[in-house]
Each structure stands twice: as structure tokens, then as C-alpha cells.
Length: 576
Image (cartoon, rainbow, N blue to C red):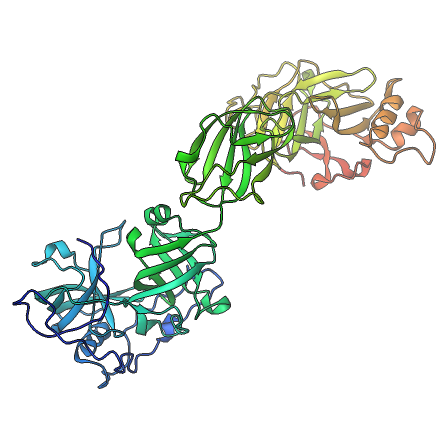
């Protein structure tokens, strides 16, 4: 059974009366001795300690005559870490903490000989020993193997395990004011401690099942505390409500990872007096047309959630109809249908509480989000307007992420011809869409860019089957229109003799702010000759999909004709 009893270490005596017969050790002794931190323990804070060099080298210090006999024995074992076929006694040490199996970290127990003296972890499952050790036991054994794991020295095999006393009073050393927890980590390693701390960062995973966060104490603050981390199983962190900006009292063990000091506990009872700020709304994200996930900076008590969604208020007429727990710090809210390309505010009521019973902070209870059906913004990127059989191609580049439903590619403005109406594709910024026109054998892709198996499709782009109408290869204005018909992008092209309406379309594109210059030297571009002067010449494009095309130069976008040039086709990949 796990146990931590209250702490003043003693040793000696027998257990014939079942009580702590040993007299307390002299806690005023030079318990740290000459132990110093090895150079391999050094670390920097630039990577949060994740890449610190493990301090696996044994302590080089000689046995200090000022250490008690038990601390001298523990020091000898720590010096021998990495060795096998050992025969090193530890006589009369006190079990300070029995550690459970958590994740891949082994069960074991910690022993210590002095109130502030050297300690060591025994990585031997207590259940395999007779009698099974518990906190407060005085024990003796012979170490036959020891190792070092990321700087932590540990006993890995032992013989002749005996118990000589029980219920020895235990009192953890209060290290809240210590300034050398990191710089003298060797002296504190595996020691039974208590400290008051403030959690300075969010918890992050450090190994399977464990999390840690930077803390500060009275003795270590600022840069001096960068390598001081509170460590606990994820389940314990969640159960206690620990998180950033919380204060806590830990009674546990000083673990380490290289030069990073890790005050650690393994059960909820090791963490007392947890006090945290009220939970704050961190973000809100629409996950469908009728759902929003709201994320908080603390774990939320699901028992305080109103399942009807009444604790979540939205603006712009949006309403909630249900709510459920999506994760420990996330609530999924069912909403009415969100408007197209709308931005909403969500406000959370203080009746929703965290696991410590605190309601949502009234000064941080709102977040903005964009409706799920936000429209992507697309730009013309490459065009091949003269392919035999009207199998013309138009490539679009996503400037912003979103859905493409209802976006159209249109030829001309005054007498428009819809070349393609895009299906429901969710694109990310930088995605490419290739529209296939004419009697194409290509199919539209809406799930992945590998949906179309036709040889004409492009693996690097979303392929879309347009209408059977191709582009008229003369003077044309091409535009991309949002579902509400506003122009997202456009360009004017010419070759040969443009049709009569070409100049009017160029001027309309200029008037919409989608093409420059805005006029022709201060005059309207009201003749084909003037309109050609500000348009892109696509003369020389090829008649096959692999022939020359007209494309933006390295995706240039100044709305001038100079952005474009005829050259080798690059459909489905970035423009050169």
C-alpha cells in the first residue's frame, strides 16, 4: 500500500515491539558532504530541457567522513551506478516513499538515511519483496546492481532484504526557499521533500503517461527556475485540476532528467492546497455548419454543463440547442445553421465551472470564430485556353482556406459564360485546383486529391470537371466569383482580334478594383486597342495539356499584366 507518513528520519533498533526504536539521526550533520554537480548535468533552457544531456556519470566525490554511515553507503551505491556484480550494503535506511507502476516507469521505493541526507531510488517492485516495504519502514539490504537513467541513480537488484523497524516518523525537507535545487541537484536527487510552488507554464507530456510544467518557488524564480519542473502522471494532473497559474504544495520526491530538477508526485494525495485562477475561454472553432467547439485554459467539470446549451450565447442571431463534453477542457455546442462567411462571438456563462468549482472568468468568457462554411478565396494562377477539342485548363490557387462550394469561374463580364461551378472542397492556403473544361474524362475530387484516377488529372491539385464549354481563344476576361457573385480575382487576356465587348469587360474589371492600371493614361480603356495595351498577351499558348500555357510568374499578384507570361505548363505544381 502506498504511504507517506509525516517525517523525522531515524534509524537503529529492532522491531520486536513493532515501534520505531531507533533514535533520530542528527539532521544538523554535513549531509551534503562534498557532493557536487557533474559537468554532464549542465543544461540550457532553450529547448525546455527536452534535449539536455543525461547526467549518467557517477558522482566523483570521495566518501565524506561528515556523512552519516547510511548516507556514506548510499553515496557508495550512487558512485557505483552502472556497475553489476556489486555487493554494497545499505543498513538501516528509511523507506520514504513507495512508488506505483505508472506507464513504463517501474514501481519501486525510495530510501534515505538522514533528515536532509542522500537518497536513492530502488527500482525493484515492492510486491516482490518480503516483507513488502511501506513508507516508514527501516530496512537493510545488499545492492547487487545499480544504474543511471537520465541522471537518476537507482538500485536495480538487491539481496538479503530485511525490515528492522516500522512506523518511523517521516518529515519531508521543506525546500521552498532553497536556491540550489537545480545547481546542486545531485544533493537533492531522490530526496523526500515538500515545497510550495506556482505553476508558470502549461503542462506538456514528457514521457508516456507523465506531464510536467515549469514552476517557481520562493527560492527559485525567473531564469533561475527554468530547469525546475513539477512532474506528475497525466491522470493526477487532471484529477487535481493543476494547470498554469495554479499554486500547490507538493510532498513527494525530487526526481531529475539530466540537469532538470523534477519535484514529483504519483498520487493525488501528494498535491495539496491547489488554488487556481478561474477558467478562461481560449478559443472557439466551428467544426461543422451546426457545431462549435469552445476550448478553455482549464479542465471543465462536466457535471456543471447544461446539456441544452443555454450557457453559450452567440451574436448575429445564432442560437445553441445542445452542449456536450468533447475533451477535458473542451465543450462541443450544437448551433443553428451558421451563415455563409459569417463571424460570430460566443459568450460563456459563469455557471459553467472547472474541476475546482470556479466559474468561467467574466473578464475572459468570449471568443470569436468564423462560420464553418466560410468561402475560400481563389486566384487565377494558370490558363491553357487553346487545347484541341476545347479541353482547356484553368488552375486556381487558394489564397485563404475554406470551402469552395458555389465559387464560379466565368468568361466575360457583360455577357458571362460560366465555365465551372466548384463543388464542396475544403482547401487550405496554397492548395491548387485544376478545372478541366470540354468533354473531359476527368472527374471532380472532393475528398482527397487522389480521388480522380483519370490520366488527365494532376496528383498535386484538386481536379474539378467544369462545363463542356471551352475558353474562346481571342480577347477574354476571366473572373473568379464568390457564391455571392463578388469578384475574388480576374485577368484580361488577348490575342488576334478581340470581340466587340472586350474593352467594356476590361473596364468593368478595372472598376471592380481587380485589374490595373485603373485606366489608360487617365482615359477610359474604351477601345480594343487601348484594352489590349493593359491586358496579357496569351499568344503562343499550346494546343495540348503539356504545351505552353499562360501563368503567373512565381504566383505574382499585383493585378498588372506584367504578372503573367507564356511558358512551359506547370499545372498541378507551383509556378516558376
